[in-house]
Image 1 (cartoon, rainbow, N blue to C red):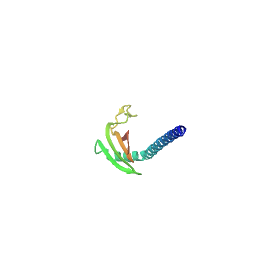
Image 2 (image 1 turned 60 degrees about the vertical axis):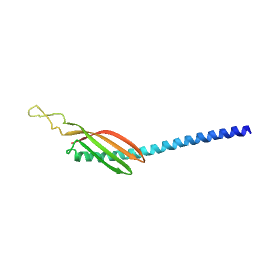
Image 3 (image 1 turned 135 degrees about the horizontal axis):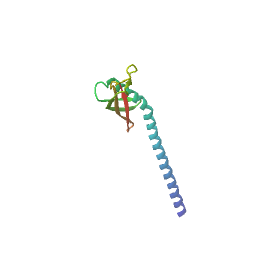
Length: 129
């Protein structure tokens, strides 16, 4: 009787351990799947935000937008960090440097992605002119 009890306890431990390992692997697989889905769409969303920034960059120093692509909701906000110009150009006829117009804007973009209750925030910089 004692041997049956010990054998049953050992079998219970093996089944419980196997179940926990399987559950952990399943959760990891689901998280990885969500991350892959998010990262596949990120380049497309970044292109959309860059287009909107270029179209609206003359209007204000803070821009934002939102949308949904392939089931992934996104919200972005861009804040202008600085305005700059290309390096001075050398005028070959006079030999002097000619300053260029400051027309390039550097934006700090915060992109928030959301899918299946999981959120991810990305920060990156973009240039517009």
